[in-house]
Image 1: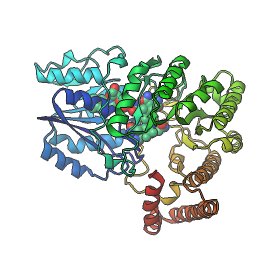
Image 2: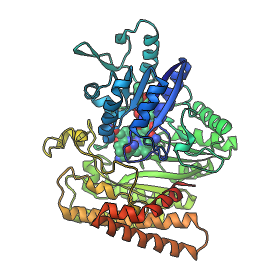
Image 3: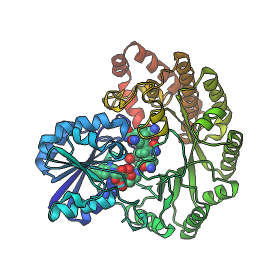
Image 4: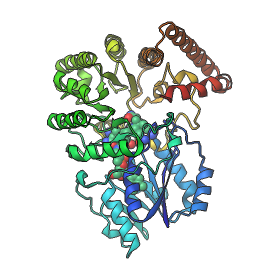
Length: 503
Ligand code: B12
């Protein structure tokens, strides 16, 4: 039987769930007679090295090796690609980064680069490889022909209602979060593609700005399939804008309610189209958590990043959503983005106050990030030359090249490594305030984590303070020497990692 091996390089930013891209493409490969192997070196519990992958390739001799690439770990992917190159017959690549820089991937040694959504073109490639081998018949690819680079026509957006149910069996359960007797975090579902938003920092080039959604029947079939075949009771909608079409959302909620399946679900979304009524309905349908892309509270910033044209309404609406979710008992996660070229100390201080103010409503936790300008976004195009960060992914080394992260990052300061992202030469005082902001968010996250895991109110403050003190010791040691921190804190770190990610 022919074999295909899907690979994702280790980015240092671990995947808590298996890549859906491989599930979609894996299903197509299986249907075309391939045995599918997956090594996600970025999975939480996959500790394989490049040497292991080379040995696997020598042993299994896959006829195709497929690599998925995001911009932030393009450098890791290229390193992997170069090392495995001479052992592979055919290397194909795809993903958000490849979509923008297919030629760069060919230079790094790939044979074929896929642009955009790849289900149809991948299927076509498998058919062509099985017949006359004429790559020009495959839409949406870039490949080398002698010294020339050939680019085929870009296909129309896929009709996602015709896609098969993605295959989850190709992934190794043990690579991800472990739960007693149950597969967890295998409940990722994409119920729509695209986002009509115009945010200047967001990458839109894969699924586009139109909003294409699958029929509620199709989505529910996938949910039932996951429940019946794998006992999955936790669904994670990873759409960019899950709640944007209210009619569809109501229909889906009704299906959840009528099915009476014991399933809970979470989603991430923009704030625009949420209201009190739909939030109650979502709760009734099993929604337990919403992750909100709030990002910022400074009016000028909200306008500049095209999050909203009406910041006053925006902040008020966020406040309302937080209250509605609290009333409905839906946990809320809030994403906060900083590091814009115009950020000042005053702005970040305001953001700190805002975060403190909304904390009591943020029952899932905060997620912080410093802007990493992604290629083909408005922000990248506007500032890359001026701030000289063109093609930063080729030289900006990731902070962590091994799996060990210092203890303080686990609870107290999880976004600490983001402080390395100074693309816009921001003043160190601004960074000082962002550091403070992260500690405020980290402390809050720690508090609610302890509260959720431990029912006993006597144990909670002991654990909270214990973890906080240990985190500060870890940070202190790290500043003296990362190796010192590691040698002293490693056992506690490894234990805590398992504690944090085990449900
Ligand atoms: C879920 C998700 C995550 C999960 C990942 C879980 C996982 N196991 O994969 C988590 C939360 C961990 C995550 C983290 C991050 N993410 Co993220 N994430 C997403 C999200 C919402 C969905 C990804 C997904 O599964 N899509 C569905 C599948 C089917 O699509 P796909 O992966 O793109 O695959 C298709 C094609 O790209 C192509 N393809 C992909 N791989 C391959 C390989 C081959 C061989 C071929 C032929 C084709 C192919 O074919 C697939 C089918 O059409 C996207 C947004 C989006 N709309 O896609 C952002 C997105 C991918 N994330 C992004 C970013 C920036 C990040 C982070 C850096 C943090 C951040 N700031 O958000 C980190 C980095 C993670 C890391 N590994 O280092 C960006 C990437 C942009 C870029 N230029 O690289 C996106 C596009 C969001 C955005 N709009 O800015 N993310």
